[in-house]
Image (cartoon, rainbow, N blue to C red; front, side, top):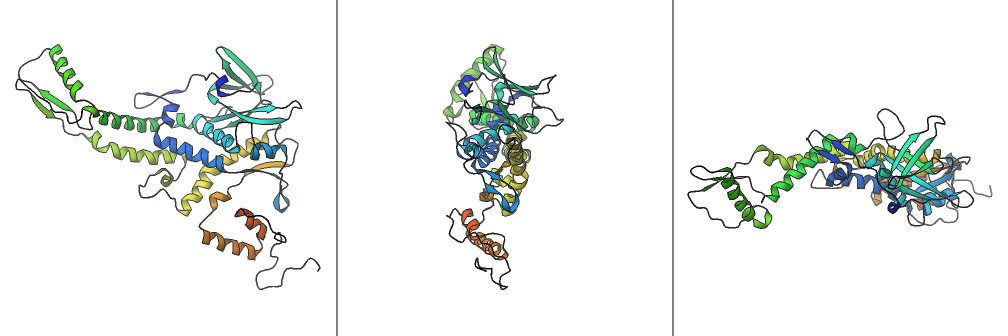
Amino acid sequence: MDFGREDLIPLPGSNFATWTGTYMQDDQAAGLPTVGAAIRLISETIGSLPCIVYRGSGPDRTKAAGTLQWDLLHERPSLDSTPFDLFQDISACIETRGNAFVQKVRDERGRVVELIVIDPDAVRVYRDSETREKKFDIQAGPDRYVGLTSTDVLHVRGMTLRGGIRGISPIELHRNSIAMSYAVQEYVGRYFQNDATPGMVIKIPGSLSNQQARQILEVWSSNHAGLRNAHRPSALAGGAELDQVKVNLGDTTAIDAQKFSVFEVARMFNIPPTLLGAFESTFRPTADEADAFLKFCLGPRLARIQSALRADPDLFGGTDLYPEFKVDALLRSATQERYTAYVAARQAGWLSANEIRELENYPAVEGGDNVQQTPVGGAPNPTPES
């Protein structure tokens, strides 16, 4: 059975109690601009990286183009998705739910011919107490579950704190810090909902009943509360006076708290703050920040996905093939810096002309596979005739 989103009945979403005294669902957290930007940055960057299937190792390794694994991971994972879709969805599921579940669709010969990401909210995963086999219950309708095993589902587990079969949601792990950011956003929203002005007090001489006070406030609110009623003229009678409450500390520091939340989210996801707009002057990271983003943020995440794919017996079992994300594009520097590096690598015998041309998306040329075997200024490379 192929599970599309229309087939699935999501399990009850996570609802986390937080220090702010409120409950937060993980989808609410992902709706915060900074959290959403972090998830999008990680998942879309991983989705944009080509997943190459290799055979062999070291200098003898070659691309295994034309294999079933190559077609699945590099060309077309399913009839209605691309490699970008597959790896972006896997990454987003891990960043928001702590787990990604991928259904392995087979043909009549039993070969895996499609990979389809399943909504993690519709999956219960557990280990059979007798066989120790990992099993999955997919909720496909009201009170209806479909039981699958690792033969049917590839599970890419996220981080855990105490081991276990299921990864923990990063949003659940950092729920209190995210809830603080959410509370600040709500506070600012309500502030603007009330005309972006401090509170008002209507002073009326004499005494009022509770009902009279409520009526006066209801009339005032209906005519002056909200952005649409901003700056409308008003009239007060009976000696009433309008007094403005002084701006409190919470009002003056709300924007500062929003800026601080950017750094908090950057720490949660291990992203250089510049990439999340922590500094208004630029979104462009330095070379060191870009290198840190690749090594410390994307590196472990790519290794997690690669390892899960490589360990799956239906995809790579019994073969000498293995997947690897190509991160060269993330390391590309300015044109002059790249060309200088290519010259050094070519002259030192690290890269051939065709390897350099491939990095720059140029076709190979005849004789371009030779590498420099001696330092520049030494004896020339031997010719094929010698």
